[in-house]
Image (cartoon, rainbow, N blue to C red; front, side, top):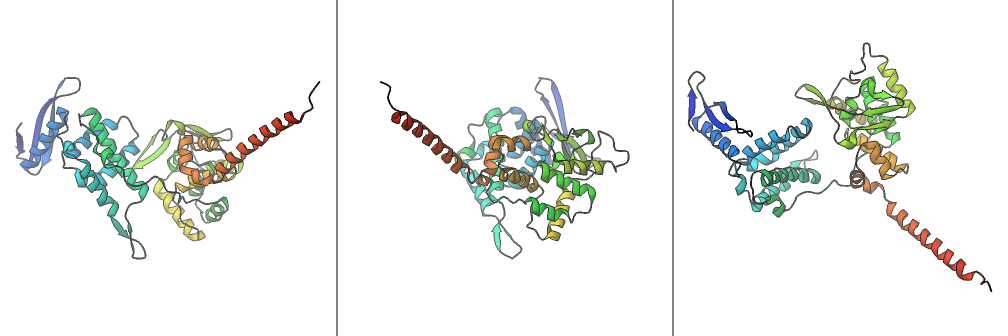
Length: 374
């Protein structure tokens, strides 16, 4: 189909007729191209998208993928995926036809990312990306290729043949003890920020869950978690929690409930559905960095307050099941994330098995030694 020149704007545009998924005829107009060839390239890519074949570029497929996913996963998750694609995937392979992306191409792309370096504060070269992040990037690439296999007749996923890169989360998890947290929190003088940090540390809430809290969510000595706060490009929104398991009721210690009540009682005109905390994640990150430096403690991320809570529960002897329920995670997630904090669990299992066997042996011996009845 031809493209056209917009004489008034001195740009080019494409006008394409197609049928949507219901079979209804539609027209798609795309304006603003500076050059005729750019308009033709877009037109060609759009036609390939509608044809449901994998001759389209990876960039064209990604547009279809994100449009499809938009109604199926959370907006914040979509933004994270888009960020990874735009930074680490499309610059390398965005122009390649999907059906020409081979395992060899995937391996070359992986090598580029794995060999990338940056300079640390001491002037030394270090890997630019962590092992868990490399694994995340690969997972996003593999997910869109699986999408192409399932819906656009791609023969196989080249990421599978190429193999993954990176590793799962390392055991170098950073967290504070309650003594360290109490030391740091003394340097926080803003009541709202102080309360937010306390809620995350003493209840294990994710930062978005904490920032979404309303007065109606605090009742009967517990905190009801049913929303996540997101601020993107200056726009505030609230969505459901991360997973179905994240919908939960978390009991809170009395001293924290007293702090919440004292804080909310000072907020004039606060309604039951209003947010208790008025800032975003960036504000809390800066505050945590500030009080960490003031207290002379090792730096941790805002999410590490949640890890700190989990570590505290594990140290107190609570089971994986109990920790998972409180954090709103599955037992599998808790085990894979915090397994290294259960250093004695295997020893305990072996000890319990040995005690059980000793008990059985003693019972058998007692039976053998018992005098016979004649």
